[in-house]
Amino acid sequence: MHSKPTMKDVARLAGVGTMTVSRFLNGTASVSKETAARVDKAIHELNYRPNEMARALRGRRSRSIGLILPYLYDTFFSGCGHAVSTVAKQHGYSVLITTSNEDPDTEFNEAALMLQRSVEGLIVIPANHGETRLNRALLGRVPLVAFDRPICEPAFDSVVVQNESGALRMVEHLIKHGHKKIFFMGMSAKVYTVHARLQGYLKAIAEAGLESYESFQCQTPESTLQEIEKHLRMKTPPTAYFTSNTLATRFVFTALLQLGVRIPHDAALAGFDDFELADLTSPSLTVVRQPAQEMGRVAASQLFERLKRGETGQPGCRTVLPVELVLRRSCGCEHEGAVVVQ
Image 1 (spheres, rainbow, N blue to C red):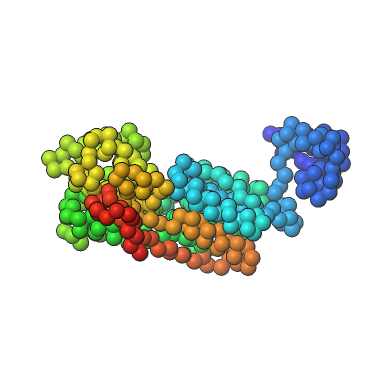
Image 2: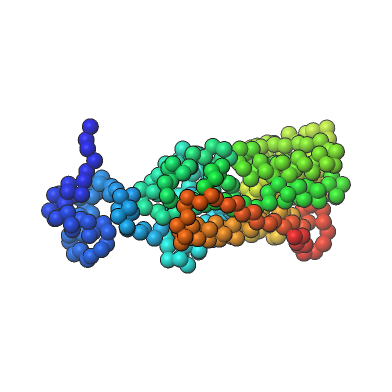
């Protein structure tokens, strides 16, 4: 088995001294373009990776943090990421961004790679609830803040919103419109936020003495369309839908329109999380608005407070941010503009 290439190997191949390679890697002194090119070529040929953690322990600060999101095609996650990046820039830090695709193994490996690159802290929207492998043993003294979804690790800070109570209030609103068959539509019950919003839905339904209906077939527009088609063939079709997040709302809204369902006359629709075009659709969409930008800002601020105080070993704290109902027309309300209920 071949041993890992060392800095001496890079220096030998590039025809320079080890101090020159060290200066090139650390940027502590200027290196001529020609020499830098030779060192860079040698590093790539040997696939040399510096021991970033050892360099960090010697006092080198990377002035960078890592951000791991489930994926970037959901505007909610990208909005959160933008807020984190803004706070980092205010502190003079750069942000390394990657995605886990909701896979705990990918998430663990990406975190390990970021630690090798000496990130000073991590901000994470964890993979599926209860499956994340991120823990203090992996991170050592590097602080971590989880947001949108918590991690069951007492040393980590977390920033979440009123998922359950927000869902409960919105379903109660649909019930006040006279709906008795309300379907909960989600993407995955494994996701912490979806599970919490489901609990709010179930509580509101139970308190009203109604029967609950839930589906987790909103992974794609096609699967959502097929699911809605089944509902419409029921002896008593649903008169309202409550969707768990932005993508589910978009998929259900599109499916209802494609199937000729008049919203809200044939079926009302309300979702969790607002998005840019929600007030421009026809009809405009009623939603539970959560503070995505604020959540990212608070998570980043908490991380930089940890870095400032060096309190990695202290117990983590949970911050819960409020949500608000944005009542538009898809739920059956007939007012002209949006009405925001705190």
